[in-house]
Length: 353
Image (cartoon, rainbow, N blue to C red; front, side, top):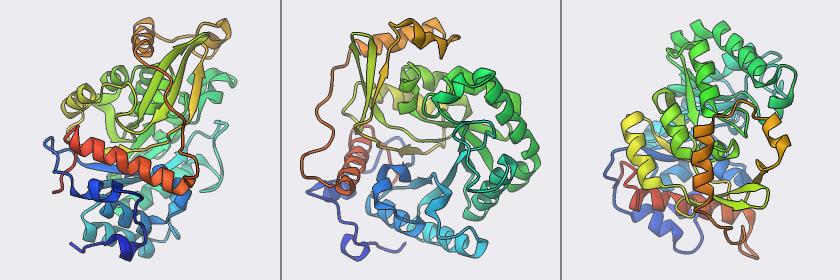
């Protein structure tokens, strides 16, 4: 395995964070630990630089969740990315964006049709050695489109079924994320079951669960059996006059019960890596004490919502998002490094010494 130095890679972290992140004791749970490249989005790094940064943090895995993180999409180039990951001992999971042709979030950046987009992602995943392709349906706004989220789920299922043979032949599982308030956990399960769980699974996002008024632990219970990859982060959830607010924070700084979460994750998701996606500071208002909130989630389940309300009662408004004078790039690097430290030292994650 090739050694990567901070100076050589030009990616030194601020303060003592780098030393802490790379010298912590190895985890005891034997769960691979890494990050989603969106955590360091301000760096605009391409795949090779992302792998080098993952090596600096002594990660075992990385979710590269955007096809634009690659210099090109040719197999010869992708093989050099895979070779670099193999050299560094870092597993690559690949991701892309919306595969729902009727979603407001769908773009034609990667093909004129959703099927072309999915075909491209499957081919790239196979070449990179990724067992999964993380995709999304869309976001909260899709719940208000004609036919509601049920129609968007049906459209996504149709695209997945059209590409079933390509995914199966490539050995790549299409993993749909609960993304930006588009689907609650039980709704995502209906998508997977309708498409076929032999080749479609879930990219589980704990932070996005909070955006749909779900306790991340309850979301884990529902999605766990279907999970193929992850993009996790902590949240602070607290009550306010119209309902609750959610602010994403570094791991260990919110009110999600992570020791309990990881214990159950190990039972429900054996062999699945934990990827951390810090997006600290973003605040979402969930105005569930106002009637119009429920027009967006008319079929929300009472028992799931009750657990979220209970979570909100344990939280409080966190401190300011970013220290004055710190650049966004340094802030993002520090947030993911702090989170990796917490996951390794407190939760016992990671395979490396």
